Length: 239
Image (cartoon, rainbow, N blue to C red; front, side, top):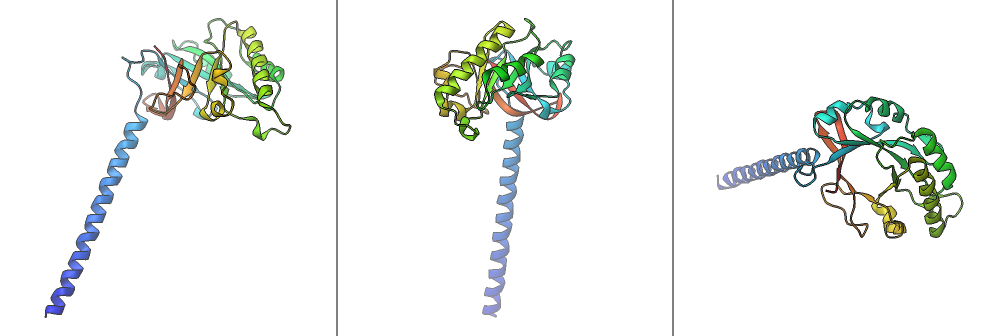
């Protein structure tokens, strides 16, 4: 009898432990779900950053710019061109649709260090109109020269980028922003070498990898809003 009682007690103990493990797992899943929900709905406060906006490209599909304006966006940057030949097929459509939304708008070029400055500038100039109403263009610096077919030295990267900036800025009539990723800055230290306003990234946490103050900050790369299904890249302006 004592042996049976011990077996029964052991089974009850194991069952209790499994129930405890299941409960702890459920609590962890609920906490994780809440953290995810809080993360994808988080944006910096308006009090701290009165001017906020979005970055939009082909990956975002159809965008309701009036809806974005209604939830508090003040501006939108549109991905326009990349390298020597790449163009965002949604750029012209987005530029037309944003016209009466009340949003200020700017264009983004994704820079390719493997390609010459003049051909990249020509690609940008063809697709982006010369319009003083546009915000300063943003040059996305993310890809490095390690994958180029021909070797490109660090000084060449800086020299070609400077040439590209001069040509693009001559077209638009204003200085460009450098939209620098952490890996590009870590590789080339370009924020310290070319004096332009900066656009940095860092979900929820203010970025400091450039070594000097930023003008724009991608504060949430997947903000969920009522204006669009899925996430949008939410950007704030330094007050």
